Amino acid sequence: MIYNLINMFGPWLEERGLYGYFRVFTFAEFRAICSLILSFILVLVTCKPAIRWLLKQKIGDNPEFNHHELNKLMEDKTDTPTMGGIVISGAILVSTLLLADLTSFYVRMALICLLWLSLLGGADDWLKLTSARRVPGSREGLYTWEKLIFQFALAVLLGLFIHHYGVQKYSGANDDILKMSQSLTLPLMKSWQWTDGHWIPSEHLIQLGTWSFVGLSVLIIAGFSNAVNLTDGLDGLAGGVMAMVGSAFVLLALIGGNDELAKHLLVPYIPMSNELAIIAGAMVGACLGFLWYNCHPAQVFMGDVGSLPLGGLIGYIAVVIRQEFLLLIIGGIFVLEALSVVLQVSYFKYTGGKRIFRCAPIHHHFHMGGWTEQQVVVRFWLITALLSAVALATLKLR
Image 1 (cartoon, rainbow, N blue to C red):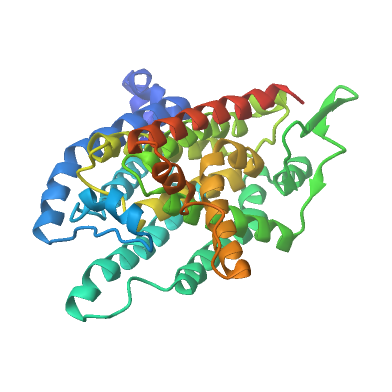
Image 2 (spheres, rainbow, N blue to C red):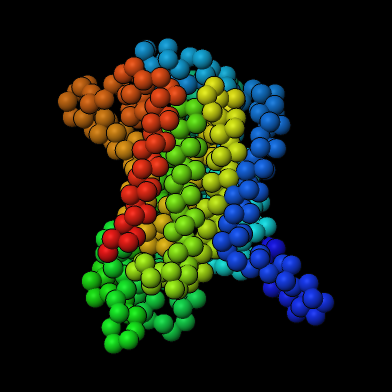
């Protein structure tokens, strides 16, 4: 909104010699930093009242697992308020509305993603926390297939619009950029090549058809939405990992939306995608602010209302800037958590009751193996920091 207002009143400000004071807001890099700071402050200020309201409503978590030893480890978390992700989603929404270019197609689709998954996660949390109290023996939350239907529907919608509309709107008749925006970007592979004094898309690009593009979008957006949800099981784990992943994608979005930087680093150039750095910055700030209250011992839990939109948004950003495979590296902890659940459930069914891990998701495996909760969380943070450095280093290895 601030960016749009400055553009709208630019001539008026210029006439009065005031434009120079506001010019800094025309740079996506500055607005991304402002978004991070603003969302951090918003969460820091609003989270304490939100915790009091949640306690008043008796919206407390009661973690229970099919494992006696794990239940003993987690018993001190009983009645800790959950659904704290409301303040995360709210801070991202406000920061985006104030600082992003609201005429951008990519920003508007990100807002749809945020609101869609926040409502889905909120409904799931509310059912889990209230239905059992009202109706003894009632189901706990939405069924898995119900959540997947809404996640898949959103991912299909986003994938189709990104493939058919996004780059065509901003690139016009530039077939080179359109081709690049619909291709598969692999680590170590060049997206550009210098030929006859001109930059052209690399001859090694793997072009994706409509449904292969949509299928990849579903895998990344819905997959990471669920993966972050599964990771949100220890104090500060999901928030800390997401803050690091989001920081890396602030840089990647700024690079992907800048013609010169994208060509210099041989990564896809997606016009206007640098506006997504404002949203990624808001995610980082919101997660850091939430860690103030969510670090051990947690005063509040994120819940599905926070974890589902965080995962879906980072997946959406990765799809737009064509960096799905870098997300798999940077978000390696999220991938590991999701894979551990898939492997555990599959092996359990196949062998008739045997397990690969002590408990899944895998953070519980290490917790039950003797690591303290803080050790699991900090070590997973360290791994994410290392994976982020490795992934960003590959930008120069092409």
